[in-house]
Length: 268
Image 1 (cartoon, one colour):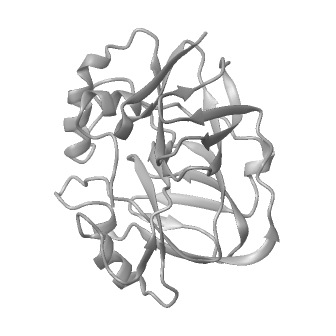
Image 2 (cartoon, rainbow, N blue to C red; image 1 turned 60 degrees about the horizontal axis):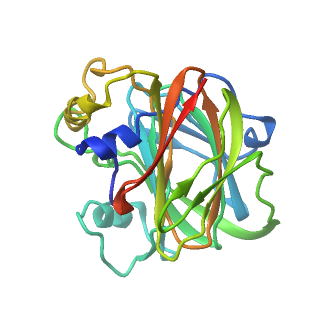
């Protein structure tokens, strides 16, 4: 499974992230509570779909991601781990890779809500660990089921971001917590790495952060960076609702690194 924002400066700068120090709105504090540890994923199972509304908190000491994949019913966790240990996952158990969440930093708390068809899904983290393995190889993988229930409404958003084939369109932003609807209006899959750093941060030092991430996040980062969680690649027409907390006097970057698209916004 692909993980993002590790080496190229443009990729890394795009995922310099928002500090989520305050709680998201009440809507994200529902039954879908997900807790990330070093190296564990604790979450309820099953989910009454098709809308899955997650309230995610990283209780660990390093950043984690949540790759999301749909697998054939009856797939075991061991089979999924073996499959996703490949550089390019292939095999009969994999149905689709509908995306997930990018880097989620220590103490970060955000909401992730989307529609998923009934079935069996796997969350996993593939960030490098300090011993040369990755987080999934240390056991950071979890399986859950989405049922065909009557939970069909996405949370109401107060901001909308559109991902197009030529641009990412972001409205004016203010400091505080926002519920953001992110919609792919393009003809191709698109992602949205979301990141924030204090205004004036030298982003040309991104390679230093890349090396720090590849080395397993040992010690403090070389720049004042926090990771709240972004949006991995989604298909055309898909909407995912994120709950993000933006800090004052920060520069935020919203990027689709695969397609070379970036929107840069200052929050006063």
